[in-house]
Length: 336
Image 1 (cartoon, rainbow, N blue to C red):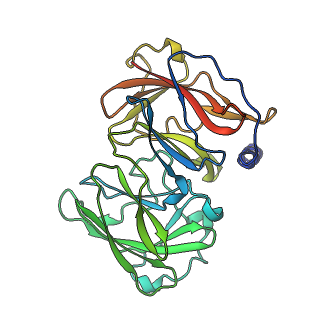
Image 2: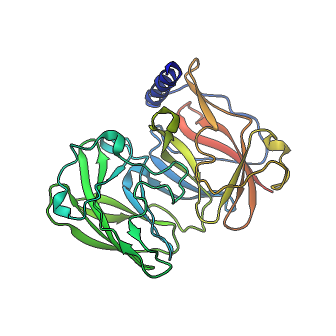
Image 3: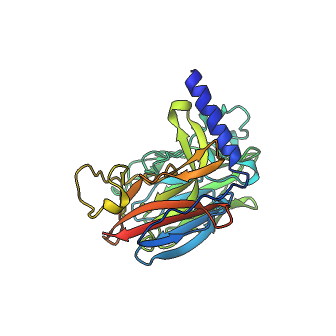
């Protein structure tokens, strides 16, 4: 118990330290293709990067979306924005009331904070806050909504209620309203098949589509603010900057033994390829309490199989710009 309390204290200290300017760290020497992206001191920028093109292909603001909907023909999964911090939010949260009448859901005051649900940090669609909101399946043509009303916690004082009425190969049909409303506003969102998800934001008492993600075959990794969950600390949420992989036909393997310069192939003993979006994640760097700086772990390398069928190796060199401001990851990569 004492160990958990100490770790929790450290985590809270790290989180508060993210709000202050830091000193510069020396850039490690490297060879190969090197690049950097700017995500900002508050990690507010979402940056999509493509290895084959060797460039940023799109940017967006992490606070611009609340919910996203899987957009392929068979897609039925709903995701929430765990990295949102606008208006004091600690990410977006969801709660299934199991009520089927919209007018019966009018308040969130009785909900225990521990009962709000989150998407798993892995990003895998079988572990989302919305879960399986339907019976049957889209593939078998017998999908039917349970019509359950979900309370969505957008920030400490903002709540809405939503339910998904239907999902087809072409669109989602959704009802959403303020908590106090007796009836819901119905809206349909057409699936964009060339993207992984369609993104929506609650604005002016309605869900509205927002532009976030480029075409799914145009990028490999994304730098974004992200909610990690420490399951061994009673599901303690910790918002960090993380690197996530494209969920579309992309795999990643982590290697903390071989060393970046010694990696010559994508196929060698001990490598385990997984689809988990957060395998690169945020722990390629760590916070040093004594110096007040983030330091890159020189032993961490990653292998990535892209949706184009190419293999790359990747490691990180720095987290600061030339003026010593955090939020500018520098990295090196090479095609294998």
